[in-house]
Image 1 (cartoon, rainbow, N blue to C red):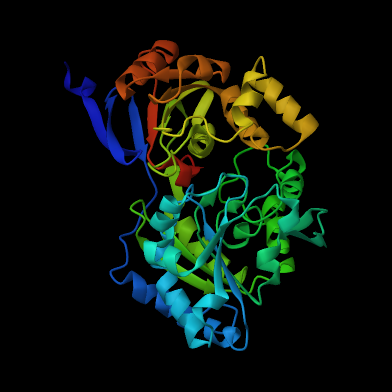
Image 2 (cartoon, rainbow, N blue to C red; image 1 turned 120 degrees about the vertical axis):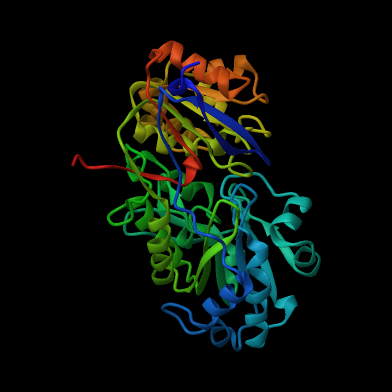
Length: 431
């Protein structure tokens, strides 16, 4: 084989393991990934330092003085936050402020997702934490546990978990990374959508609050972000502890303090890592969520399609490398897709009917499908199910590449997006 045809090998995260991707050199344009930084040598020290010098608030131990109850919101299993690294210094700060362990509870920001199992909670928070503290999964459809705080200036009803509202001290933890609707995750998102009611999510995640294009990195003027921020302030969020992480779940920066000011500092660091220059659009884009838990199911894996949607040419092909060990994912997603005759049907229905569990994801999925074909590399979802979702399946990466080249032509250009869920593509300007 001529030298310029020899495959270009790359190892990419896939589930808890790796896949090797070999792109023929004649087709390969670029392999792109975020500018990840090495993990901090003293992660616990960095968390402690951030707690000692919060942004926009008093130190947490000062805020905690005299308060009799605290609720700490934590991410669920679908998010890669290494929460267990944050909790020991955070709990010690509360103790230094005079709080006792039996006054501290944890609330899992499940949004519309399923409950997290005890084993999952132990992996996320640490077995010791789960044994010593009460940990509660949020249930967005249980109106009995909600409290209505009124509406945002954008008309979004702020109905959230009462446990958080009634706590005398309200703290959230999360990771700041690109998000296809909110611009960036973390901060205010722990409240909305994290611990909000389904009624609130129906309004906030509806078409009127969403961009018609992937919104990674868009903060200023973004109604999805602004209404979530207002909701978090209405909920009287006292303090956030957020990290920026690399692809190994190692902490590269920690911010603590005000739900807006501290978060924006984290956004600056996140933007510097996740904005990636793209030379030009490609006929074929290979994208990967970045391994477990980001590729736990197709519902979560869709996030890596948002970056590919910005990079692939109109009429091109996207290859999604996602293990999807839990299958399609949230109820409603498959139902919406399989009820349609084409992706445009889903888009039109979402505009007409608005948000429901699975509907928003079906809309995002279909928006990419309208622009390009999709091939999923996974062995966990049956071909007939994917066919009803206007998607083809391949057993291997090589098979998927050959399928795409057969459609796009033997000279089609290919770009690989490693950790595509965490990427803000920016095209290089000519010259």
